Image 1 (cartoon, rainbow, N blue to C red):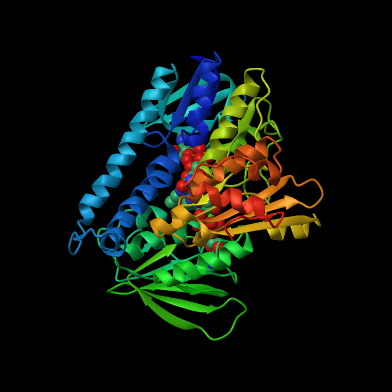
Image 2: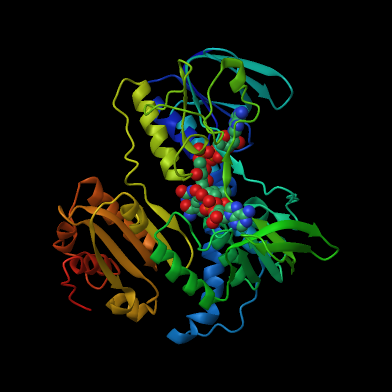
Length: 466
Ligand code: FAD
Ligand code: NAI
């Protein structure tokens, strides 16, 4: 069988690419080694983690916020197997949805491990041991990423877990030790704290959420500490030893010094993810990698081998589902002779904790590093009417605008619903908006979005409610 396009991997990058290619009239097939479509994101990432974040937040609401509003439902009882079933139902609904969409668009699916077998040829090792050879004009590699391992620490997905194991624990650990204060550590640390765990996060750097705006990191750490999460910054884990009841974790100052041993029932290793290219046979056709093991592409997603492209977590850039999706659309459009493109300057980044953290564009640290002169407007949620009445006053909005042109360069939000609030800014930035444009846009009252408008007003020191 001969195709215009074969996509290897059906995560958010691969399946979206296949759908867009089929929409544009390309005869398209996908190869996926998992039993279900949707990749890391739908099976063991974005979707199950958000289901548990939602459910655990509701659990905590029953004792924290409902009584304040005059609603008493008594002592909440946790039915963890039911919560996990709720999570799985969400996952199944989404993965089945992708299978339906692929079929609806006429994309053929092959289940098995895809391997490059020369120019224009993909070999699929089928589940039953057989092989299938697909001939194609173009190949898009969308094989995603995998958990980064910590040397000397063996992940068994029971006591020492990756995010995958942490999404599937059968019991609430009394003590959860998280290695890495990045997105996974803070989201899943929050889930288990809300369900009753004592959570300690050990982070190598002297701050949490590296890569995000420093002020955001600082304030967010204080909020999480108030919620009960403990942090051990500038510290490294040098060994984890399983015991009969859990694990002993050796922690040292990052710069060296006296080690101490911490005990935990479960240890979550969340120190990043690495591109996944195992078994793809890149070497057989000579596809080049960069120094971080990512597939090297040009700005049209082409590798050094004619007809082979790559997108998503397996190439450079933020490891985010929406970045992978947009690259999937872009490469499909390029292959169909159109002008596909992704604006890497405007990729929103959201941490789905409570409150949420959201950012788009440049941080203050990046602006300083690049020597760009900027103005800052800040507005706290304590001064927003809707946040006050909802009692969700933690956090703030910060708008960074070019000192000369007033163009919005970055916006950083800690606060309830920050993930939705950031999107008006992303659209504004796509249109090259100034802070004045946001400040002069009528925002509905009473909404949390008024804090974004007020922060934009604050750029010229004319916030009205502060
Ligand atoms: P993947 O989703 O990893 O998909 C790759 C697919 O390729 C997999 O299904 C794999 O089985 C398949 N594959 C690999 N090799 C082969 C082969 N040789 N043959 C056939 N198939 C193969 N991002 C967000 O934007 N928002 C979030 O809220 C979010 N939450 C996350 C939570 C967790 C716990 C984790 C781990 C990640 C989260 N992410 C989130 C990141 C997001 O999951 C990834 O950025 C996204 O899945 C990348 O998409 P992708 O298509 O590049 O790869
Ligand atoms: P991360 O890169 O976000 O954070 C890893 C953290 O571990 C960093 O703070 C790093 O300094 C620290 N670290 C590294 N080595 C360490 C060591 N030896 N000891 C202690 N700390 C160490 O990676 P994370 O949290 O594993 O997530 C992986 C990726 O998945 C993210 O980068 C993100 O792209 C994606 N993701 C996105 C989500 C979202 O969009 N809401 C949710 C979850 C994951």
